Length: 145
Image (cartoon, rainbow, N blue to C red; front, side):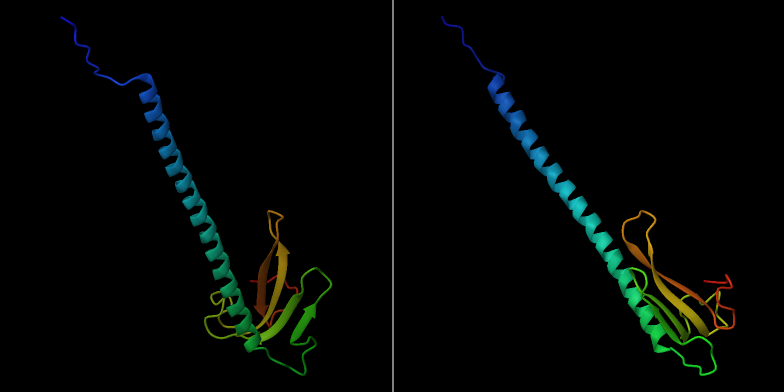
């Protein structure tokens, strides 16, 4: 009588093939997940920049829409300096209700507003900055919002 030899397990090549296939599937899932995270992060940054640009354009539009001319005023209603890499724009304007800085300058609709580009803290690129003060304060008085 012959002893029956039953195989109750897997051979080493079968186990190695299964582990290899499982590793490849896990690697593909991880690569897809990492790509999805990078895409989500970059799209969030792009959306943030787009929103900032929209707000900046709206603020500049509102500031230019109320530009005022005063004949007896020593400074002009609009100044544009082009000495630096980016222009600097100074405006004397009547701002609409709810304009930025409404809490600090709420009772002063006539304002001296200046738009300028400043280098970022990281040293990469520039950011648009708006400074405003009441028209009744002296120029360079330090009371800037």
